[in-house]
Image (cartoon, rainbow, N blue to C red; front, side, top):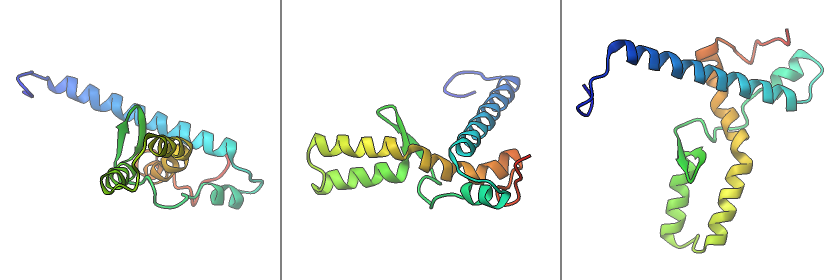
Length: 129
C-alpha cells in the first residue's frame, strides 16, 4: 500500500525490471556516443578516451525546467541568486545554456562507474572487440 494505492509485488518487480532495462540502455547509448566522438587508434588510447573528465555530475541529478543537471549545479545556482551574484534573467539563461552544453560531459562522469556496476564493463580493461 502506498498513498492508499495497492501495488502488487509483481507490478513492483516489473517496474524494477523496466527501470534496469532503461538504465542499461542509457549506459549503452552513452558508451556508443563516447566511442563515436573519441579519437583513438589503439586500445590504450581508447581506454584513455573513456576516462571520466572530473567529478562533476557523479552525484544526484535533478530536472530543472526540462533540463537534467547535477543537483550540485542547481544548489550553486540557488546560492548565487540568493546572494545577488546572479541577479538578471540573461545571466541565468546563460547558465542554463552552459549547462546544456556540459550535459554529456557530466553525464559521462555519471555513466562510467555505473557501466561497471550494472553492465560489468570496466573501462580500464575494455577492448575494442
